[in-house]
Amino acid sequence: MARLILTFNKQVIKEIPVLKESITLGRNEDNTVVIDNLAVSGYHARIDKAGSDFVLTDLQSTNGTFVNNGKIVSHKLQHGDKIIVGKHILLFVMSAKGGAEPRDEKKLDMDKTMMLDTAKQRELLSKQKTAPADAKAVEKVGVVSFIDGSGLGDIELSKKLTKIGKADTSEIKLSGMLMGATAATISRRPSGYAISFAGGMAKLKVNGEVVKDSVALKDFDTIELGAYKFQFYQKDIGP
Amino acid sequence: MEIRASGLTDVGLKRDGNEDAFSTDDANGLYIVADGMGGHLAGEVASRIAVEMINNGFQRWARNDTPIEELYGMPDSSLTLTGNYLSSSIRLANRVVYEMAAEYEQYHGMGTTVACIHVSPTLVVAANAGDSRIYMVRDGELERLSKDHTILSEQLDMGMMTIEEAETSPLKHVLTRNLGSSEDVDVDVYEIEPSNNDRFVLCSDGLTDLVSDQEILYMTMHATDPEMLCRDFVETALRRGGHDNTTVLAVFVTGIAKPKELPFKKTGLLFADMIIGMQKMIKKIKP
Image (cartoon, rainbow over all chains, first blue to last red; front, top):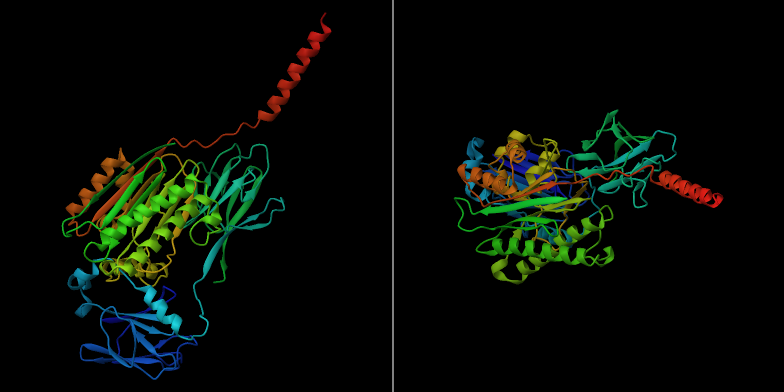
C-alpha cells in the first residue's frame, strides 16, 4: 500500500493512504489532499496509479512541484521520495505488498538509521517565493498561580528549571524563616512538568501530600510550600 | 555526591564496523553516547568527532566560567549557564561534522545522533538530537529525559499513530534531526534537580530496538553496579539477534543531601550575644 506523509516545518501533519486510482493535491477544498497554504495552487498536483507504479504530475502550479532535488512536470514515484509543494513536504512511502509484514522485505534498508536531508529541502524552499507559513503547532507553557494572598499572582514557567526559594537567584523568590535557599524546583521534561523538593525546613506538599523527592504535576494541582499556596496549570501559547 | 559510571559498546552480530562512540568523564560529570551513520568509515568518524568536540567545548567553557555571550550560537534563555555550555558544545560539534561532510567526498552524508548528560550535585542537564535515548530511574519509575527525533515518534506525539502501529512502521529509523545534516541543529535540553540514588542510562537504538522500557527499568533498579548493568544490557541485545551496534552507558548517583538550613541560626546568635554581654556586665559589677 502506498501512503503520503504530509509534514510541515519538520512536524508530521497527517498520513494519507493512496487508496484511489488518482488523487489530487491543492488548496481548494475538493482536492483529496487539501493543503491550506497560499504557496499552494488551487489544484497543484496529482498522483495517478499506473499498474503497480504511481505517477506524480504537476498541474501547472504557480510555485511548481519538486521531488527530492528537482522541479518536475511528471515523475514516477519511488519509496522515500520527498514531494515538495510550497512549504509542505510529502513523503511517499510504499509498504510491502498486501501490507501484512512490511518490515520483512524492507528490513535491510529501513533497519539502518537514516536522516532526512532537511538541509537540501530548506535550500530548495528558500529559493521559492512563498507566502508566510501558517504554523500549526500549539505549544504549552506551565504557570503557577498564587492563591494565598501573597499578591504574587500568576508566574509563567519560562525556564526549563525554575528554582523556588529564598535565594536571590531564584526565579520565584519566597520569604520565610523556614524557607530554603532553594526550597523546590519545577522542571520541564519530555513527559511534562515535575516538582522536586530541594531543601530547607519548609515542607513541600502537592494536593496535601508531602513530597520528599519529586512528583509529576497535572493541571490544577495545588502546591503548598511553607506558608505559600499556589496552583499549577498549563496554558497554550501562540506559535 | 558520589558518581559511579560505566560504558560499554559492542559491534553486534550483523554489522561489520562499530559506528557508535561514547565517553565517560567522572571529573567533569559529563557522559556522552553517539550513534554515527554514513557509508564506509564516515559513521565512525562522525560519532567520534561529535563525542570529542562536545567534551572539549564543554570542558573549556565550564573551566573558564565563560559568560553566556561568548558561547557558540545564540544562547537559550530558558536554560542555566551549564545547560547552555552543553547545548552550545553540541551545536558546535554539529557544525564541525557538517562542514567535514560538505568538504570531503568520503564523508558526504555522514551524521550522528548524540545523547548526553551532565551531572552535578545541584543540577542534571540532559541533551539529545536523534534517536539515542536518556533514561532516568528514580523512585522505581522510568522516565525519558530525551526525545526521539524520528518521523515515527513525531507521529506518535501528534496522536496519528498507535504504539502498536509504531512497532511495525517502516519509519522507525528515519531521523528528523541529527548532527551533520544541516548547519545548525535544534537540541532538546532538559534540566532537573538531582535526587539521591538517581540512575541514568544512555543508549543507542541498538539497545532500545531489542530491550523494552520495562526491562530497562527492571534491570536498572536491580543492578548492583553500573558495569554489570551495561554488560547485562549488551548481552541481552546480543541474545536477541544484535542486529545493530549497541552502546550503553550507566550513571549511578548517590550521596546527594538536600540542604537543611538552620532556622534558629540568627536567633541563636542573638541569644549568644546576649549571654556574653550579660556575663561581661556581671564581671564588671563583681569587684
